[in-house]
Image (cartoon, rainbow, N blue to C red; front, side):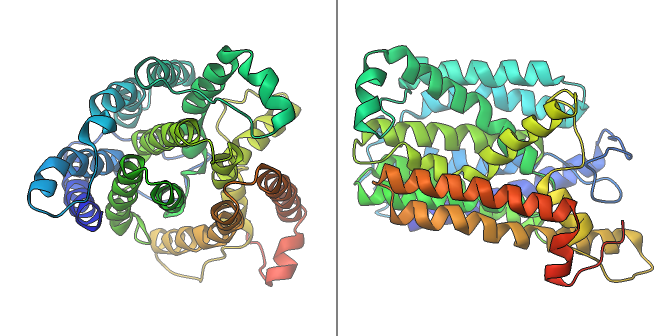
Length: 371
């Protein structure tokens, strides 16, 4: 696994740099006045291509690494990499097109992720076989289509959840990296080296991207990166629960509670205002932290000031991430405990959000808003 991770990291590191240089040479300008924009100037948004290169090349090189005695006992056939590639292709392609043109509508992007979700079910048999509570599982198993629908919904929705939190340097990438390590930890305990290798390769490829993304913000993941993280992690979540009855279905829910709840809460607040859930705004939690807590020092260079402020935002949310991943890894078999932590996180998120909106968090952290 170490050789696999190192290979994925190095390929991603080099590929992301090459993508950045090519994008700087032949780039298409994007809106300078977008509400969610937290940087100055043009920054390439194709970091997802570098992550894909590191992840895919490392997994493709597994047979060679095994012949060289640099990889453990991993069943190449059970990896089913061609089916993974086929399922990822529609949504990832849509993400790349959006990064290049900024003209692909929300409706088309949703449709493409839905196609990927349906392919995950058709090619990999992805479905959620149980809910983790005996009194419900009997009814759930009596209607197998419910498990299929939930799996397709997860694969369709999670890419957009990662896209929502991909607003500041080091946030979405760190979430993806930590989540993948959590899945790899549980998969290794269960002896599922195939799913563990997929998770570790993605974590290492993400680390290669983060080298350029945080804290300097030299390249962004873009829609392609967010969709790749969301698709692979959603498929890992479903297959881990499907293959191993000892894993609670609430384990992946708690691990992913931050991006999932960010999406649910964003949809709610937009509908409450009478706005479309697909409309971009600047009221996500990371954007409030950027404006209210991550105050920058005075500098003559506006771009440098925004970069420092941007890079100070993600660490606040890394703490939130630990509130979900740590208990999930400890109690991955116990549905009741995992559900309780999910509810606790949702309440904590809402409390933190309201405290930022009403300027209470600033007094706690000793910060003064300058907006």
